[in-house]
Length: 549
Image 1 (tube, rainbow, N blue to C red):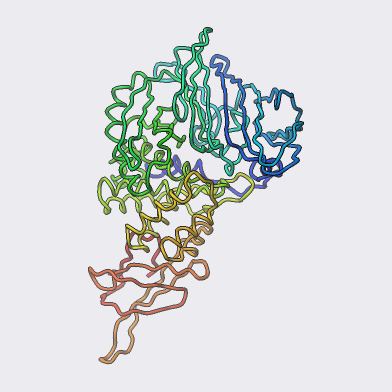
Image 2 (spheres, rainbow, N blue to C red):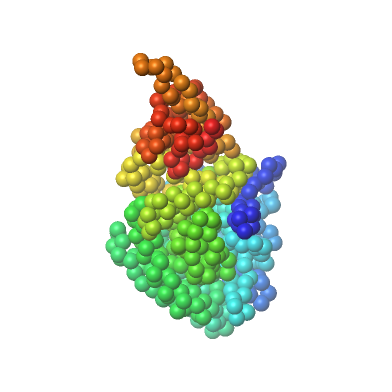
């Protein structure tokens, strides 16, 4: 069972060495045709032809001109979808296509500081996701009653798999609207708040949703199904937060019991550790999805079957992971890390996944105590592969290895142990969400912020765990040294398998039942100890290190 879990959870995220192509660079870099304009608003209209598995619509992008006299604007749209036309100021534009990149040739003057609009019309049969949410595309699903159930999962692959946009994480629109047209009596659900429903008089209806906050391109998603709605509210740090739940009709009572019990506990814990929920304007929403789950901002995808664990399994193999709903906790944690704070380059996705993985440990601590939290965190270390660094290659749209989850969470548990002051650690997490609120960031910004706020230089710790596959090894031995009254037993220790300058302090037992701090380096050091043998030497299990005795 453990091997099965490892394969099921980790393997979809593992990346392998590969040659990068021109298309990878166009997709993953801030090209000149992207750099001169800033996306401000997406107004996306999409009609779903469920019978023929096709979509059609348009996206009107409002953008700010950052530099004068630009002639080309890059828009991304993946085949087999087709761009039908591009229109600005009433003029149809032409383009030069390079794979999935469309370089629109502009006619109107693009004055620095001005705001412009361009409408992009398209249609086709988008790529179908083979194993959502791990690979991208549209999901033409069926519910338990064999009725249509449609959505999209596109993190990594990118939202240009289903609509035309500026497909790079560094530039989020400041707001967005999504208008979903679908056959009646199906219901269309999306991010933000429902503005209106329009009966089109032809057997279809259009559901118009609006997001008031900046949003990742890959987070803007539709859900189409036989949905029922119920609501509640949570009195949080910024007042009354609306809670909305959209679930399949036959799961309504089950969903009410589960979500109304679990959601307030999660929000209370995360607001304590991370600060106020970042999107009070848009509300918090859970939407039942035809796949396991995704962090779709203010419309979190939920497919865990209203049960505890990860589809009823304990990823930590300790029993602790069966005490709470994995998908509700993990995907909601992304509202702070991933959605509120987003990375400019997908290579730094550990900021999304490492912190959100650690939200599982924090939630366990909130509900069941710190001993259970550490048990869960340590148990999940069996899922770490250490085959590739966590940080991927920049500018080619490459994620790092799947270790960004569990290894990232263990690194943060280690950092918390070094800080050794939960109030200070809490201020680090809350400060990140406050100072980088609704922003895209680099890993360096996050690393520097943690070190500065904690008052401890963690740069070598980040280098070790994010940029190498080696887990630092503490070599220890017992030696006899001369003392005033004969000889004295001492512990000799040093770090190996570590980056130059690695200086992680450790809490250890140098005598039974008593914890002490040591600060190993790569040079051998000694400290007096009162152990009969190395069998009694212990390292605080919160630290993700190895010991060689």
